[in-house]
Image (cartoon, rainbow over all chains, first blue to last red; front, top):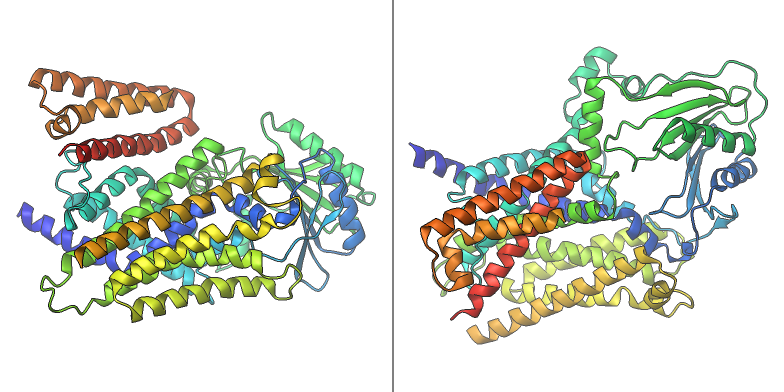
Length: 497
Length: 86
């Protein structure tokens, strides 16, 4: 009976893992990179270098907003921090629609950079796949459920969890892939369970909307308002809002949070007499994503505050916060990133193992399986697409119109090219060719910026611009590793022939 | 600090397994020392976890991540050591 159960689980594991596996690989890889979203954004906006956080940031931002959008409904200011040294302002115009600008925190001068989504491209791809309507989110949702199924059935299938804990036997064909899959899976197991579950939590109101439909008659905005605390409009006739007053408000908010700093300022109806200023605490100050905030009227009186909701909101905030990991400092962020890559490796090796196990034993029937081709197109193709995105960011002219769309096209077109290539060529050759292509793209990406004066890897090393240096180094390391792997694969193929 | 403790603990656990004793030491250890190693390993892991728990939630998250890295290091060194042996 027990063996029968295990076999059923193995069957479930191999099929629940296969189809969602390709999607999960994309979600895991882009998600892992999203831990460094800010750094990737900085890298993709090299013109913004040289800015530094400054206590005057809020004051300058208000000055700029009063100049650029005096009649806006809403102003939003994202204050600079250690990871992102520029101020971002955003406003909602009278006719709707959002506009945003980057400012130098020290002077309030507008920083003009190339148009790019930066790291946000991968962030949205991670849960949205850049698919129309909500198709991407639904797909990711089902993939996450399949991931939980695959993890649990995988644990049951894995006979010797502890005995094989440290075992990896290279150069043994199928055995090696199984070892690699097991080791990566077991090592990243706590992370994978946590991230799949919390990932589902982030989309929970989408795929389980019934409670909101019942209690709020489907009014999701009212539900969100209740979660975050009611909005209170200031009724007193206050003087017009000024920069120094906002600055004073931010400072008094920070005094009320013993260990916290202000992260975001929201100004509602800035031009009216009922303006309110809401100061949200920085999201790196707590694990929970249920951010605390304070709301002031334009004359600096505290009119409302949110110090965390009830137990359910708190739990939700923690789970959501755990998934985003915005609280993490350098070491923890790296650990999350590494665990994410381990999870990615587990999925990739699992997909390869599926093929290797079922590959026709008879070498005389060389017709490769579709799954094998799909593996090449996804496992090698997605990193190629990401590298192409990075390179396109450097090569497209900075002032080009519709630049964001062209960057996205570079991503998707190169991925399609990888797919076509995988379909046309024998998988063995396609693997080597695509991994080599990935290596070349990664090595090429840091180069164009080196020809820009006062920019590029060497200049960033001199000015201690660590975020950009690290992205460059990661690209170079990936490139060299990929080239080494391709040449190793090439020599082995020659030896076999 | 925690990482070193975890690494030591996992190395002890690894060395308490006959297969890895052959990989890393070229011969199997007597049963008693294997058991001692296993106890040491678990003790080190428990101690590191206790330290992390006393440091708060962020330290626990770090502990989980460090556990993964340390296990990766131990597994990689096992593979390298056994590859060197003919």
